[in-house]
Image 1 (cartoon, rainbow, N blue to C red):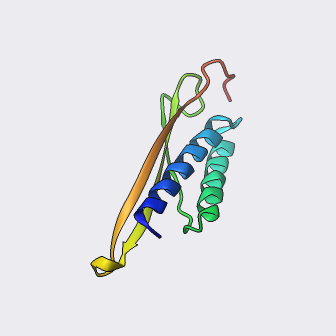
Image 2: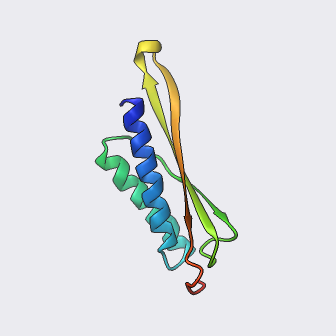
Length: 102
């Protein structure tokens, strides 16, 4: 996998996971949806699946808060003697301030 492909996949996975998280009805459902979205994006890109790191700013699913999702992918650089680097992407998504509390 190229660094460019990993960067694109990490960005897409983080964005879709954050979107899935903020649309859920409960925190447990949000975690599951975010992990599933990450799984789907990375599987579609033929990249080994990793777990997203999810942090809530101002509370999880609290109206007006934010959810940050980070996806970090290892990339092997065989032309440098099989050195590995990590490519990561973080997306932040607001929780609708007019939604009901879970």
